[in-house]
Length: 278
Image 1 (cartoon, rainbow, N blue to C red):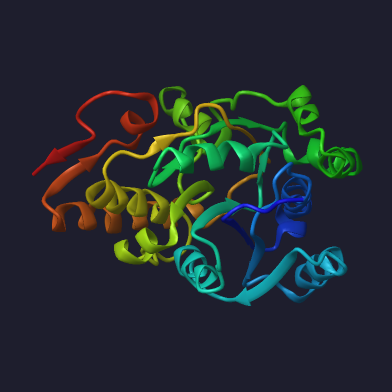
Image 2 (cartoon, rainbow, N blue to C red; image 1 turned 90 degrees about the vertical axis):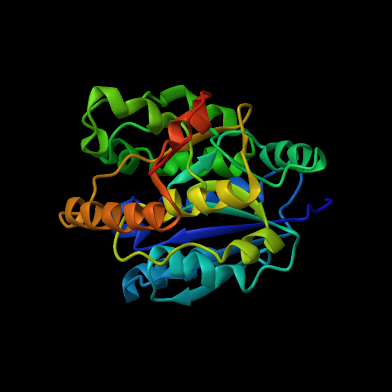
């Protein structure tokens, strides 16, 4: 099987406790691509001993999968993982975001061959709630291991307004991937930009990185022909406070660069006025 010049970085934290072991679905999906990633690197970020043991047990005997461990912020863990990448391109992938096509890597190669510098915004459907995921875990493992990933679409849904505490007007943005949960960039450009800002807790580090990419590289390629299944899971109790704090950090980054707003939805769905000057 030929390999691509794309390495997949899968960021995971306590997947078995919080996401019914969805990291295994993601790993399976990449192991069964028609064109293999150059590397599959699982960044085990701050998982407890029980989750780490389960992840290691699953990956034992998978020669194409490497686990690296750290205990950093989300942005810091992604930056750490890039140090182990040997290929030209980096594909960031969260442990709850499953490609639903077994030619996903081929589709990404086609974008890269068009001299695309970076991209994200794949079409993202969601699973039913986490109880459904737990009950169907065996079937999901079988599907992702079979190579027929289109079967994942059978029960996929459009996210309801209550998901992630979003209101009806903001549900649309959940239908596209952000650069951190499924996005690709050349390694040289990643380093030139300086990597992900290392915000504490949950949220906004990928918005901030997308903003920095836009300033330096221009518009991203939007992956309109790639489909993902996001495993639905509740946020932690601390997430709302972390989001609020990180939104302030993001706003400071914008203002330090002379802007008051960065409208990522206009990049993903078309439209002008992506940046608003102070």
